Image: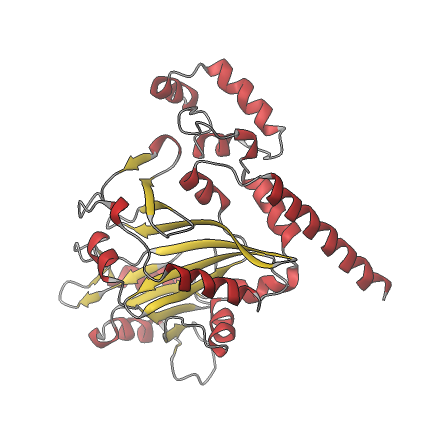
Length: 357
């Protein structure tokens, strides 16, 4: 069955009406591609009830926004997790502790450096090092990230959730060696906040806050949270930006999108959750934004832990689609478009001054 036929069956929308709407949105300010139209459920009027679909940014428009809002000088620092960690930690911002770094065949004297597959496997076989967060050194939209809670040497499995989900040890070593030979970071996994740990099967939620730097200083722009599920999927949580309370939950996108009231494994009522220390977490991101001047639009990945909020990562190109799905409203408000236009002009003037010098 074609995508349009599936959409028509699910929503009752007529294919010709959808094609006319898609054509209009594709030429609109959001530059919507057909993949965006499906992924963001723009075919579903009930989903976007009360919201102007012309304010939704597609992938192409999102990429333009990042290029117009952020100076290229800031990209290298944000994209390299080790560099961002060292920089922000030097100012005292709380971040997970680095335990080891895998960089295949790198001739360097670092004591925490794993240089071979054998050393990587030996490290992962040491039960003392767990629990861990594993992430590529180079940030690529969440690819390659995993929580490792322990190892079962007899079975040759890495435990990835309290529900018993696991990954093959040798397969994981092979995957990291083949795909991230230039750098893979292992950090001490902080203890999750108690209420969230119970509701999310022990998984750490990632709070995703986008900040913008204006003439009046850093300001919060959009907020949501995500959490991994034992099957490797992702929960998407809508958050109240004033209180940090969960106001909605879902998983999947497009035709696989599903609204949730409860966690699909633990049965916990997700809408009873609220971020602990939310004012402190928000203040942490806003203050840290001042240290990344070339970036005027930053995606902060934050985690609520038993010891307080921590910064997990900095994203110079946050996923706007994730926020639009969570909030069911587009990012292209008049204020935000004015911000992007001002940044575009400022960067153009700075570039002209550089060329004239």
